[in-house]
Image (cartoon, rainbow, N blue to C red; front, side, top):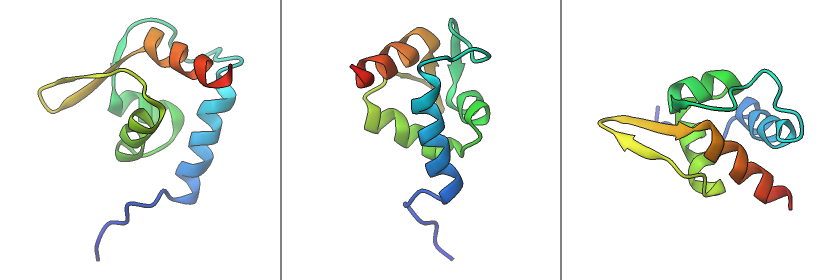
Length: 84
């Protein structure tokens, strides 16, 4: 069985959740640098699809070995820009 490059319904929901959280991120980290694995778990989506979200949204990130690291400030700033 081959892995689909399409998002699952739950990940589609998670993408919408991320967009809606911009207005009131509340319990999500506002500062610090976290791996894509942590971000994906926070939003209840797969790490692969979180990385797709980064690419599609133009959210800045950097690679550290095999890890993708995202700064919380960069993440929320880029989400707010999308709303404007």
